[in-house]
Each structure stands twice: as structure tokens, then as C-alpha cells.
Image 1 (cartoon, rainbow, N blue to C red):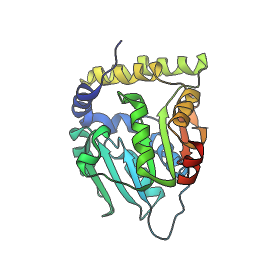
Image 2: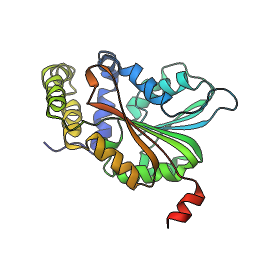
Image 3: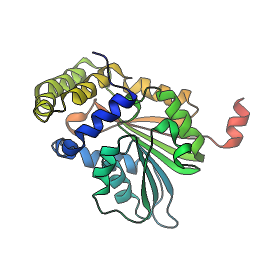
Image 4: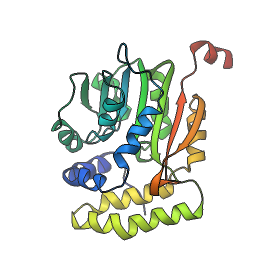
Length: 244
């Protein structure tokens, strides 16, 4: 089955926005996993707040995780779905959090400019038509030694983990989403994971984008082997010049 892209995907998220948080809350560990990945950025708490870019923020679950882990951080949260951002806007937010409606390919046009101390991308890359371009943009927006955390459904490559994913999506998530009228989006989400990189391939993609100290970190619970955090950092300018 072909997956959704660009305007079609944004429209599907717009339609699903009203029930998205309810389905996410039914996923054991969903919010705790996002906070764990936010901590894995390794940013120091206290002192001047870091500038953090939250790519693909959706209804703000990833933004809330960043705000909880990094109180005082200056967070710019971006998403291509106006419907998802309207849901995010209903939450109370610190003044240091702002939301921007823009596809990740057009950040500069929307006034999003670096440098940032960290980029957080949750459930984004497999939905991007050009994931390598997204990583290249993240690299450019980071300060030297700036941190990247990619929180993603990226299967381990083991048949057992793929079987669990297919069983959960086909037996539970898709039937409920279909009753809510959002079957096309969740069918896309199911198959986009199967078609996307394994965790190891995702880490290699991040390395090819020019990042260093790339690590793949598992997440606990039923999503072990299904969801991972890939953390990395942008090299210093001197390192980049030396590698040319």
C-alpha cells in the first residue's frame, strides 16, 4: 500500500487531530517515552535556557515532553498540520514556547532560523518525503556540538518485533481509528513503519547526514524493538573542515 505524503498527509492529520490525543493516551508509555528521549538530548538543566527546535510537534506531546524535561528552554515547535497545531494551542504553555505552522522543508520562509542548541524530531522522518533533506536542515540549524534526538517507530529488524507491530496495528489501532473516520491515516502510519528504515539503518542515515557520536537507544515496554531514540551531535566547525 502506498503511504501518504506532503499535502495528503497534512490533510489526514488535520482530520484526525480531534481524536489523536485520545489514541496516543491509550498507548502505554507514549508520553513517558517522549520525556525519556528528551532527556537523552543530554542538555544541562539550569542556567540560561537552551534553544530547542521541535520538528513535527503535532498536538504538542513532544513539546510538552521537552518543556517538562527542560524547564526554561526556548522551544520553537513546528508542524505542517494546522489542525494538529490548533489542538496544541488549547494547552497552557510557558511564554518560552511558540508554535509555527510550516512544513519542515520551508522553515526559513516561516521565520524559523538557527542556531539551536538541540533539534528534537518525534515520529517525523518516516513521514517525510525527503528524510535526508530534513536531517540536512537540522544539521544546518544546530550550533557546533548541538544535539539531535530522533524519536521514531523504527523496527529492530527482528521478525518478532515486526509481528508485534503488525498485530497491534491490524488488531487494535486500525479498527478503532476506522470507527473514528481516520482509517486512511492510521493505515499509513502502520505501513510507513514497515516500509521505513530499521533502527540500524536510521542510525546510518543520521551518520551520512554528517552527525557524529550516533547511538541507537531502545525504549521499554511493549515498544521494545519497535520504537528507538537515535541521538547524535553536530561536529564542531573545525571537525567538518578537517573532514573535507
